[in-house]
Image (cartoon, rainbow, N blue to C red; front, side, top):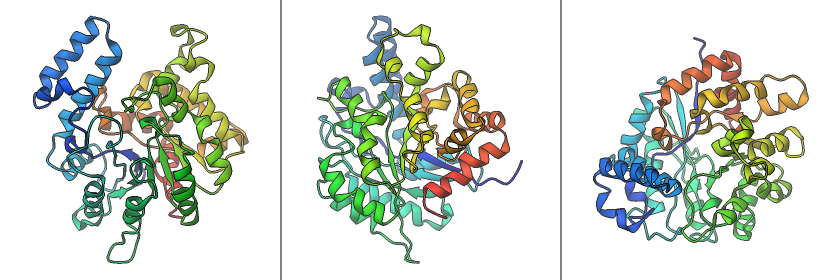
Length: 363
């Protein structure tokens, strides 16, 4: 194999104590210490047709299997087994304090501090590239965000490499607090933004699916991209599995379904290839864990000819979404190897090595 330094641009290490006890349902609290029983409940819910609820319970099960680890480092060590020793990981924290399920046991500040310590741990050899998280409802002026981003290592180098937002929790990406206190300084200091862009994922308790989708869809970022043209924005998940499935097999969904009429995968490709948003990026996290269904489309998108295809190739990042992907059949290592084989060394190097360096501002 050629010498490629992989940068996985989308992983999570947060644990159960970073998640409110009542999420996703208060009545499940007694079962959190017994993951097998949670799995049985989700199976029963599916049998009686309660698929959306079952999916939330599955997510809780997944939290309990991986997130019961003693520390973020313990989760990291389980992740590192799947990758070459020189792999780097962009670690994305979560702030779930404002979603209506109570307050997590461990604060975002403490989560940031633990990540800062991991990033500086000499035993890890620079494997951890942490991002800082903000929910503008919890941190209207970005004080905790900028406290984290101002942290420096002993050489004076910035520890936190970018910012993560998750609008599906209940706020717009062009929220006035972000537009005033976050994006201007991010652009000035050349910090990248990672944001959730999939119809799935965690959602605020009182946020309807319709409103959550309006906060999350690619079109919601147009004003941010217009006002901050030098801000490097990554719309994670390349639109998400639901939209990839609708694109790949339109017979399975109604012609007027949201994911057909306004397909996010198509929307992201069109925005990037238009040339109107030169600093818009996307990653393939979680989406490629439905490997057989999606790899042929991805390869076709990335191997096309012409200016538009080159724009897309230059703006796609490798990411996995560990440990959310533990609920899928394929393990992390298998997906990475299959992707490398399907795309070939040159293209895999592009999305897993060269593009991340540019997106992170390391050039």
